[in-house]
Image (tube, rainbow, N blue to C red; front, side):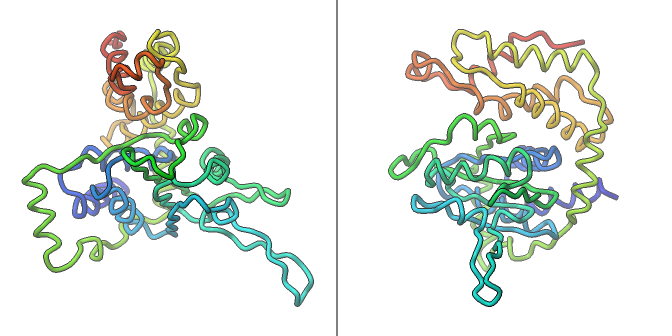
Length: 309
């Protein structure tokens, strides 16, 4: 029953974003792994549309925050407001108390405001006024940023990038798919026809099932070798963290589950390594300014790392 709902979710998203099946599957993989997603791409390719389509496909709560330079942490978490009737402060929850949070143009907010998301993204809780409040389950942050516009933006710090399970990019559609986009929106936007196909309980149940997917020791050792290679490569200043290993492992389990397997295979790891590791590493300045990208370095590491039989 749950697997039928997975296919229904893919179909829902494919109705709004054409020709991007791999990105759609990666987004679903991250959600079932309990991870957050950073979508970095040029404006107008469908980042926000994809996030909204996912939210509409789930019968849970959805919040959207349009990040701006003047935004404060309290605008995200919430704040205590004095009530003159009882002479007490009452906490008013912010938009972070939801199931799916769309953080639109996250790099437009100041580092202080960006840091308000760190605890929520990693521990699924927020601390305010000396109290800890747990967030709903499931909880997923989908953040977008524009990589070609730097005026009025603040680069995401490494500590925050490390809390994103994946960094995805939609890219421009092909001419064929762009024709489909044009005609599909001739009369109305397909996103208005999306109805929920999954409940929050369904997603929670799937996340629990994902944790049970087996990882054979040789596959686990393969993941560890990949992670260690990023720390010993002379082109890389900052390698992948243990959190990156745990994320790669969980996402590989999620991909195996989506593909109806009870165990992880090396191909799961290979397919996910670039989108789970590239945004977490920092290249040496010499490499960075010579046109080398983090993704190409990770791809090279994958090619050079021995795959278990």
